[in-house]
Image 1 (cartoon, helix red, strand yellow):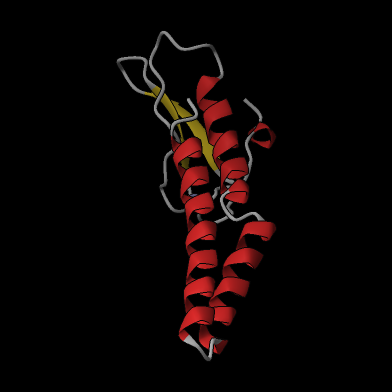
Image 2 (cartoon, protein in one colour):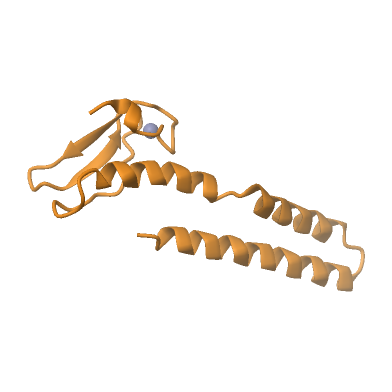
Length: 114
Ligand SMILES: [Zn+2]
């Protein structure tokens, strides 16, 4: 199995990761640098499912912080700090809440995307 098939570790960015299978036939990808593990897949899973899960994790890591969403959070945060009136503060807090909800929704989807 060529290690070039695996994306770098989502935690330490190491490219040294290995596909491991335990005695029960459960497999997962483990980072040889920091020891983080990808999703454990059952023996009944598609061949390569552990690799797909590991590689998707990296992709998921990138999806977790879409620039647009971070920008929205940052802008709302700055607006809150700069708010001089209660009305402006409430408006900024509402923007912040909206961006947080979008982030939460995204995290929720990613976590349940199996
Ligand atoms: Zn690692």
